[in-house]
Length: 367
Image (cartoon, rainbow, N blue to C red; front, side, top):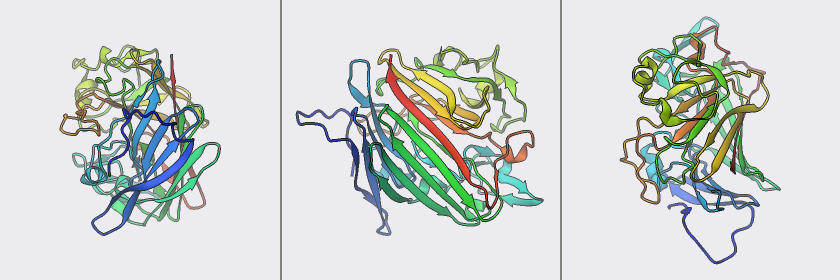
C-alpha cells in the first residue's frame, strides 16, 4: 500500500479533523502494520505508521495556502522494511553515537551492537525503528497516536526491561508534539529522538537556501569517527554559528574547517544556551520561496543538526522525487552523543523508580 500523495486535488469537501487507521502492509510472518492519518481543523495532515513510529507524510501550507509535502519518505511499507536512512522513525534506545559500543554503569561494563565504524548508533541494527509498536488512538479536539513498546533486557546489549511510550499529537496550531516516556527495571541509558528529514520547499529543491537559527552558543566537536571529544566549543567565529538566521549553504562546504570535513557538512550536536528543563525554543527553519517557517521547541539540552550529507539519490519518494544529498535537514533533539562515556555531559542514566520524560514540538507557519 502507498500512502496519499500531497499533490492530489479533489473537488469534494476535505475530510474532517480527527484520526483514521488503515492497513499499511504485512510482514513476512503475517503481522500487519497500520497507517494512522491525523488531520487538524486547518487541513494539516500527518501520517504515521506503528512500524518504527515513522512519520511517513506531513503536509503543510505555503504562503499561498497550498498544501505540500515537507518531509522525506519512501513510497511503500515494503520500502520501509528494506531499511531507510532513518527517514522519520523513533530512534532508541540511544540516539546518536556511543564510542566503541561500550559504556559502564555502577562499575558494570556493557557492550552494545556496533553498526557505525565500530561504534553504536541510533539503537543498533535492530533499534526501535525496526519494531512493530502497539498503537492506541486518542481522538479528541486534538488527535493523538500513542505508541508503546517493551524493549527487553539485553536488547541490542542494553540492560533492563525498558517500557516506552511515544505520543504524537497534531495540534490545532499546526504543530506536531512528540512526548516520550519510559521506565526501566534495571539501571540503563536512554536518549530518544525522532529522525525526520524536513524540506520546507515542498521538495522542490535541496535545503541549502533554508535559513537555520539554533539557540545555541556552543557545539560538540568530534573526532574523525564523529565521537565527541568532550569539549564544548563556542560557535562564535566558526561555521557552526547559527545564533542568527543563516542560510545553510553559507559555510556547509567550508572544508578548511576540520569539523565540516569530518561531518561532510553538518552532522553535529549543538548545545542550547538555555539548559532549563522546561519546553523552550531550540531552533527555527525558514524557506523563503514557500514562506514556510518552522519553530522547534524541546525539553532536551541539545539538537543534532544533520543535512542529509549521505543521501545519494538512489531512493525516490512517492511522487518520484530523488532523495539526493542535502535534500533534507534533521533536527534531532537529544542528550549529548556518547554521554555515558563523558562524566561532564548531562547524564543519560535511567534507574528503576524513575521516569524518563522528553517533549519536542515542531510548529509550522508562514511568514
